[in-house]
Image (tube, helix red, strand yellow):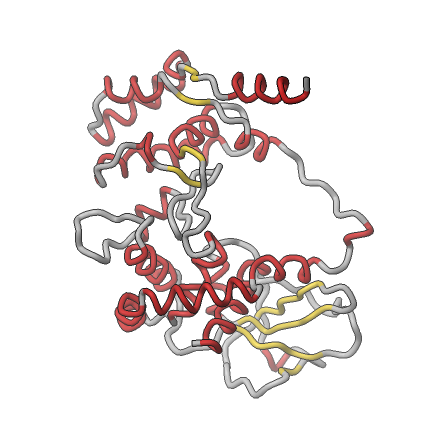
Length: 322
């Protein structure tokens, strides 16, 4: 009975829906026709047959839950175990060696170390092993026109995606990605695809499912967001005690090192710019780091200090094995 219920639920949830019956979709189509000179009949056909997946709506309607007391400590232990484990490091080394020429070309042109580019791809999709299974067009339509907390954002992403399908000459119905519409090895949302995508192999298309274009696009993203060639990313620091609550931590707050008392790097660190205090919550203590400007640049890819630190640590582990 339970299996029958699940199958019935999946059948109902995946039935095609005609979104052209919505007045706001008709207005959206008209804007595409005027702004991008897209064919109205083609768009009507696309929007008349949308598979309604449940995952995106659940994600953007749900409220944040409070962390239980049992899980109060050890958040970083759990996070880094998933993102920077030995298998991910070995795969990163192999990925760089497999695409060595591309990495060398891109590092020379953009000034981004190859290990950081590889780490982004490793954290995002396990080097292309998990690029997403959801139809990008269908999910973006759902997120744009079914009520949720980010309708405006996803309408813009849908518009960018359809424009890309025209300029890059692909069928929007054939592209798979994340439940939120992120695409390729590097999981660019459509607006980033348009802003930072690079046609590395010069075939006339930006294809983020291909390693060359993906590697160059990450480097271009970092460069345009302010990466400083030759500067460090982060270094671990020490302080008195097991938990650090003396100063505000996080990638958004910067300090002059001379004004921070009782915090010193474990190793010599010649960086003279402003720093961020990055706190990693471990089971028995807080691990504290200085984050430089380049650390902040990594957070432009994903607005999370843990994400940026996982990229940094994975990159360093890959570098040590090259």
